[in-house]
Length: 305
Image 1: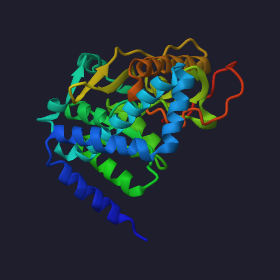
Image 2 (image 1 turned 90 degrees about the vertical axis):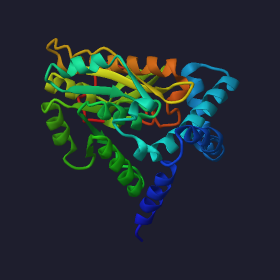
Image 3 (image 1 turned 135 degrees about the vertical axis):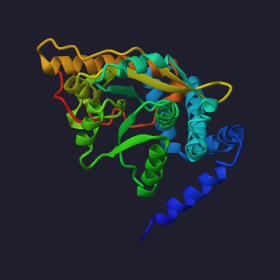
Image 4 (image 1 turned 90 degrees about the horizontal axis):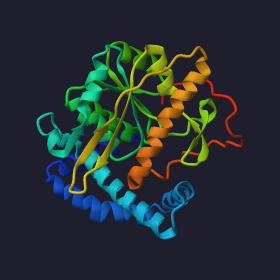
């Protein structure tokens, strides 16, 4: 049975939401969608609280407060994604401010493209949109959603914002490599479980399989790595936080060098999560791959995230 009706329904709702004032979108996310999601998603809520307590060693009350705030922000993010058709290069700064833009601009000037390091923090969909609408040449490898119609509308909005999209499951690595060769910014969400191909690295105090893709691309194309995250402003809207760039350091031991670069990236993501704990997606299955032993050797190079 065709599911295209889901796409058309989402588009209809999205078009309606795009007519609302932005503050109304935030209000509905804070008062309706977020609390409803918190109440209905019991499994994700329990996993988030358990993983947060284990990682940050916080009390039951603090964990519940952080996770409740996370779900409220996720409710706002969901409605903001549907509000995406209202975003244009002319009004994007009304919603999002970019801090330390020069770090990314300077990295691009070197002509090797840029490996953008980020994570499931804040409204990561609007992160790419903000950078693309600000004039940066953006590209990303995206994971297919369980529902094809959700993937379809997300990719439509990504491309409308000016992002070149490469979907997993085809020739995405060839396309991603071409994007870097063309001097584009290639985005990686590097906080996901990497399965058997990842490096075993401590993440928030617990051993985890960590993606090697960003480090592998940085090495192969001599591209600078620029960490960039998006977080919410208390008064509404978002801040894009751009950090100084760094490079793959070649000591002659490729496996160790890729591992060390991945470790550095992991530290940066951890620090950002600790600074903004209610912005990270605590219920994702970050530690899904069973890791019984501490690190003794670096992992092998893997694919893009």
